[in-house]
Length: 277
Ligand code: GLU
Image (cartoon, rainbow, N blue to C red; front, side, top):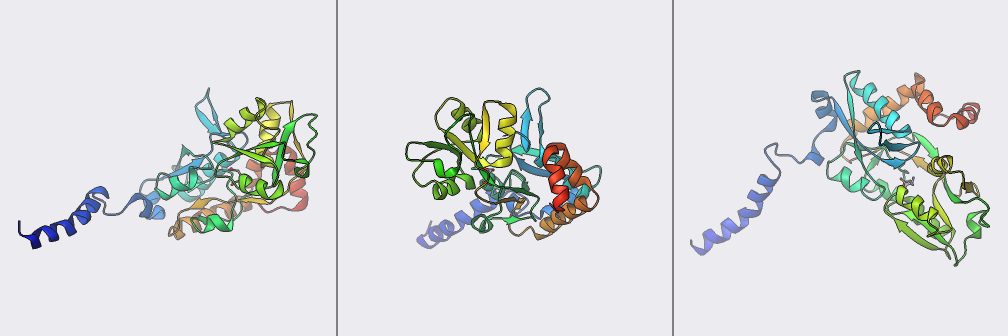
């Protein structure tokens, strides 16, 4: 081979590889138009939690994932695709959800995810569909009554990739933080005494406290955590459909029905305040 030919083939090799790797479709999964695809094959793939009671929890007996996020995802799917529409669920953790979305493994994240300016640089968010706030979970009788009581002697358990880990450093700068992979691990760590408190959103902690009488929420909330559905950038049609579905569900009462199913105690207060989402 002449030197020139070798240079040309070296230049084209990466291009050829790229074409082969991206498959016959000629576009990567992350770049496909989701709004178009789901009209052809009526399935939306949702990234959800599998270990978070009240939002997304795998029931090992029925092998079904259940919770508020799951019901909202199913209802949005039906609003967009009609009765034959299928909602498929893939497990995400706080750490894996954005990478899985960006790689095209899932179409959307509905997984207790707070809308933040930082995350908006990477993904788009739907309108707010749930309001939470960060709080603390402690053993009953603990001297920790609020975030201000956390000292350098305390270890707080939090989950990697969550806003809770970032916020707790600001609100309890002296405390030690131990970051776990997911909420099941964090609660186990609290129960085995690896920390004096666990921190995340009040609604998530409520799910844990309701399952275990020895633990309670303390000190109220110290941040606002508005939840949104995350969708890849460049999927404006799909995002618009999700927002329209949310608004329709609010108008036709489906949203309230789902809310009351999972948060019966809060539903009354919400109704009185005239809360929208
Ligand atoms: N809402 C917070 C967040 O998005 C905490 C819950 C979670 O880790 O999913 O980070």
